[in-house]
Length: 228
Image (cartoon, rainbow, N blue to C red; front, side, top):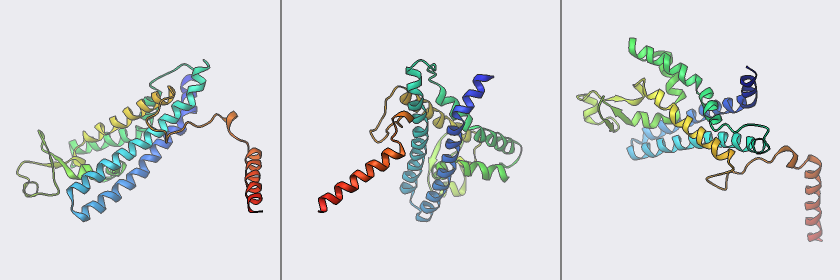
């Protein structure tokens, strides 16, 4: 029980941040969907959908990677055991709302029409994928990508939008969990994909406010001396 409390105390902020990032990207994704739908351009919609998904995964990667870099010094000093699936657990906690809404949506889809509040909520929560789910259709055996072609309008093959299929929302959780798992492992081992990602300095290595003021004063003095 103490370990569980310690885990939540240490990583609850990261789980909440992942949820907030999802909400932000959901708005962003819906905006892209509306813009590309007005343009009626399949290629543009595909690019926008892939871009929104990658952007979302990059934000998740950043959160989980920083978790790993924060834990790395403690692990190396032997104060904490290395647990490679910490990022997995944090991501699963962050995806609890997605699981719950997906379950409700599934029940509604199996016993009703899949609409209602649960349908609206789950489509919003996965707004970063909405361009792709509005473009790609499925008929039970194959996928088809179009913006309301003649075959889809006549619905002769029984095509359905991906956002209308209950099982899609469970599959969409998997990439987020995998990205968080990989990112934490990379951060905990001190590895990175790009030099743009720099680990936060430990509190003991960060400059104090006094040091920052002295540094700014010295820079200002140098500038004044150059002018003279």
